[in-house]
Image 1 (tube, rainbow, N blue to C red):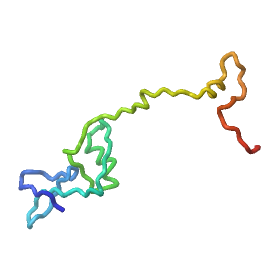
Image 2 (image 1 turned 90 degrees about the vertical axis):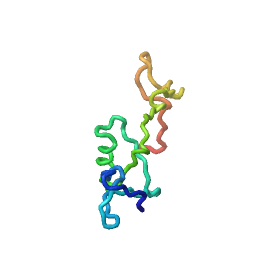
Image 3 (image 1 turned 180 degrees about the horizontal axis):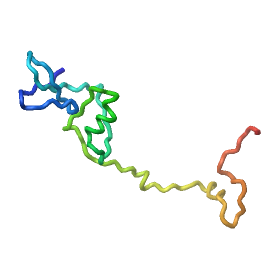
Image 4 (image 1 turned 60 degrees about the vertical axis):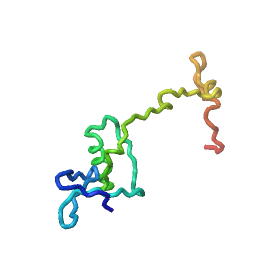
Length: 121
C-alpha cells in the first residue's frame, strides 16, 4: 500500500531508503510504501562499517531479501558493551583448584575435575 506520493522533482528514487519509482495516474512518480509490520526486522551494524548502513545492507541483507529497505529516521546510533566480557572474573570451583598440580607436586592423573566414565574401555 502506498503511504506517500512525492511531487515531481521533490525526491529522488532510492530503493535502499524505501523511495521507489512507480507509475501513478499514468505519470512516473517517486512513492513510499507502508512497511509491513510482520516483515520488520532489526540488524546490528558495526559502528565503523566501511560504507555505512548502505554497504552492510547491500552485502548482508539484499542477497536474501532483494526488496528490503530501511527508514533513515529509525536508525539509532549506539554501542553495545558486553559487561560479562570485560568485568566478569572466572572463579574456578575449589575442587578444581586442588587438582591443578603445583610445581612441588609430581605430574600425574588429575583428581576430581572430570567425571569418571562408567564403562570400561
